[in-house]
Length: 273
Image 1: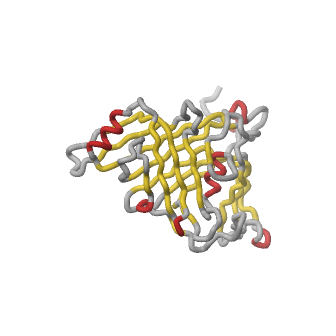
Image 2: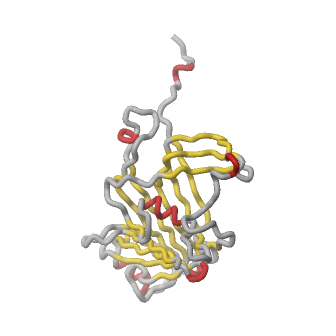
Image 3: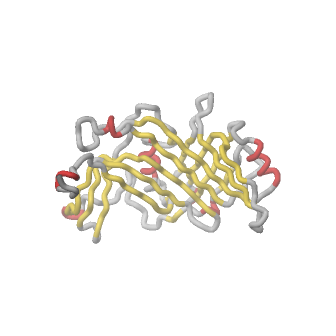
C-alpha cells in the first residue's frame, strides 16, 4: 500500500464555465435599445419589453460570450451561456449598477479575431452610441413604496433575482459537458433602506408576511428614456431604526411573489422612443 496520492487520484470530470458581468446600467441618447437590454432579454428569455418571469419548462436564451484582449486582437469565447442571476442596485449619490452570473458549456482560449470583424458591437438598430451615460440614482422615482403611495423617498435599493435551472443530473446526461438547459423556477427579493418616518415605518411593520405589497421604481436615463421595475411580494424582514445611528434608518426586504390573480412577481418595461 501507499499513503501518497498518484495521478489516478484526480480525474477529469464535468466541464462547466462560469461567467460574471457587472457595471453601470446605461441608456443611450438615440432611439435605440440600451446595450443592457441583453440582460433583461437573457435573464427572462423574452425578446421584447415588458420582460416578465417565463413559464416553467421554457428553454432559456443562450449566448456566446467574448472576453477581448488588446484592441480585440484575440478573445476568450464561452459557448451556450445562460443567465443564472441578475441584480440591480442603487444608492444615494451613486449610479445604478448591475451584476449578473451565467453558466456555459465550454471555453475556447485566445481565439484570433480574424480581420477584426468578429467582435464588432452592433445593436439591432445601429452602432453602439459612444456617449452612453449611466443612470443616476437621483433620477430614480418610486410610487407606490411597499404598497404606500404616500411614501416616495428612499436611500437605496437592491433587487436580486435568480433563475433555477436544471440540476447537474439532467444537464449532464451521459456527457461531460452540459447539454440542453431547462428553466425550472424564479426567486427574487427587493431590499430597501429609508430615513425613518412614522408613516413609512408603520407601512412596513404592519405588512410583515401579511398583505401583498407592490413597488414600482422608475429609472430615467438620457433624453427621459426609462426602465420601469414593477414588483409584487410580501415583506419578509423589517429592521427598526437604530437610535444610536444619528439619523434613524429603516430597512425591509420583500420576497417577490406572483399574485393569486396571476400577476407576475416582477415586470421590467423599457421605453426608449
